[in-house]
Amino acid sequence: MPIYAAVCRALTEAGVPFVVIGGHAVVLHGHQRNTFDLDLLVAEVSLAPVRAALQGLGYRPYFESEAFLQLTAPSFLPPLDVMVVDERTFQQVVRSGESRVLDDEQILIPDAKRLIAMKLHALKAVTRARREQDWADIVGVIRATNQAIEDTELREIIDRYGPSGAFTELRQRLG
Image (tube, rainbow, N blue to C red; front, side, top):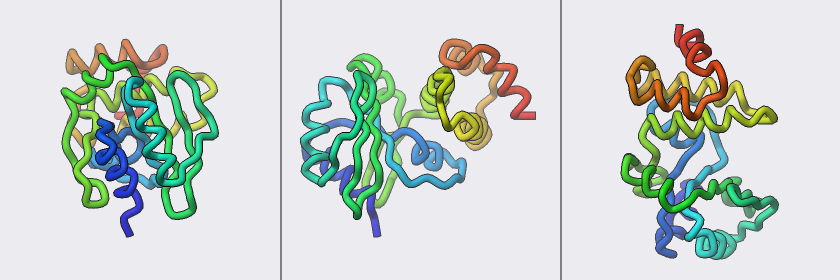
């Protein structure tokens, strides 16, 4: 039974552009791993209609900051986290995004390099509980998409968005 389609359809019907990020984007890039919750990226200008569309499905906010909206799900839908960014950042991700299908719905995911940047940025939070999963996702996406960490653009992303020593850490993890 498709459980993600309802969220995608509700946002599309509300005219809200969104990008699927997190574990589902990692899987859709070809790195197999288990994931259930749905992570979305939206522009801050879209936050009110996003909130309204999701509350219409029965989602209820339990944490909100400038950058995140976390929602509890009704029993028949997946847990949902929404990352909120400025319009410029959102458009950069959209321009380089890649179309995929999730639960028979056409969606957009970040290209491999933008997804790696997001995962690296998450690693900068020293209290991040899922650090090993983030490293595994980064390595998995690099391998699944045949990225070369010596590539100039990817190296700049690693240096800009990753924690101190990220390039060395990745070289070790990649063998």
